[in-house]
Image 1 (cartoon, rainbow, N blue to C red):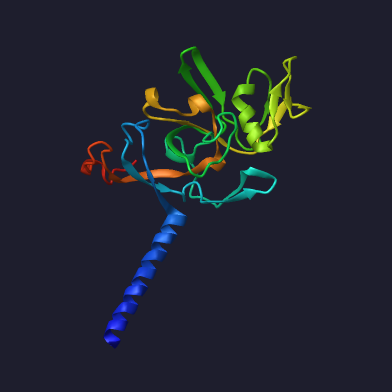
Image 2 (image 1 turned 180 degrees about the vertical axis):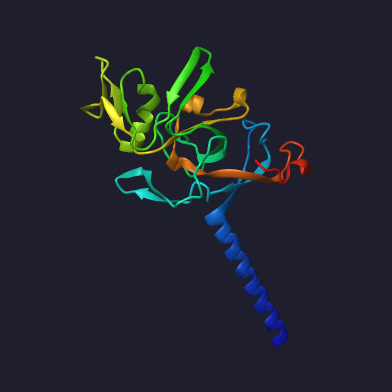
Length: 240
């Protein structure tokens, strides 16, 4: 009887240790995410399961803002080195609930490649020609007028909680105050899918605030074809 109880006790201890290891890795180092679409093909395809390092940008700690119920107050712990150009990044999609207003929704995540960093200029082709945008970095002061209003008004509304509008005279206002320039409080990134012809990314919805970044994809730990349900053994343990 004593031997059985001793074995049971060791088994419980082992389970407890395994749980602690899993919890520590899950919270402080890695999370698992599923890729549902082919917007990152061929790097990632639908049915891939990837490990995402939250330690690279730093783990987020967030709580509801009592003054803005739909907004989170976010503190990020010091990370390893931050997001680099070319990283495959998992982030909260900023327009999961409303198309015209950035909201951090903790239920909807996207996975795209970072193609431009804060302080850089990114240019891409559209059906109408060429589009260029400057990505603000923290403490950047940028002149705001009708020529760049559409690039930044959602960012400014996210940071301030106040509406930005253009008057009939062509003046830009933050609430009721004339807005001629603005000092940004966040770093902004440009995200794009590798499958450029079938990806809904920053080319369509704009730049991404640093607060929304969860982590950087490191490897595929499992993969299953969504249609055939067959395991894709050749994709397992591929680095990203």
